Length: 168
Image (tube, rainbow, N blue to C red):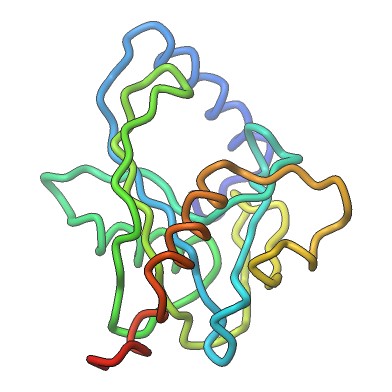
């Protein structure tokens, strides 16, 4: 939605949620735990300019499986939303199915390492920042997406960051 005003993104979000509640389509989405290039204990969190604008979460979006793979989708989404490119190694942390918005969303959570620290949010993103994995870089009382919590827990359980393990 590059170049789309934030108000238009908000309206489109409301229309989509009404459609999802009515027809309950099967959708596919991706989200990324993006790790800092020099510190795997720091990640990117964003606040969307639509939906729950107070909640911090992971960047990502939807894709069509017949047109692109989940990995291609997460690379595209993060490039569009934040202007970020990743190192070649990409790990799948979790595959989930959720009905939180009324649709049946098949969600893949990835772990990637950014090639740079420069964040260039598009209009879909109200705010983006680098923060320690314990969220200490966010204001006290900040609400966090459950998918960010799931991805960070899975990252800690999996161990080394992409490209940093014993096989790297």
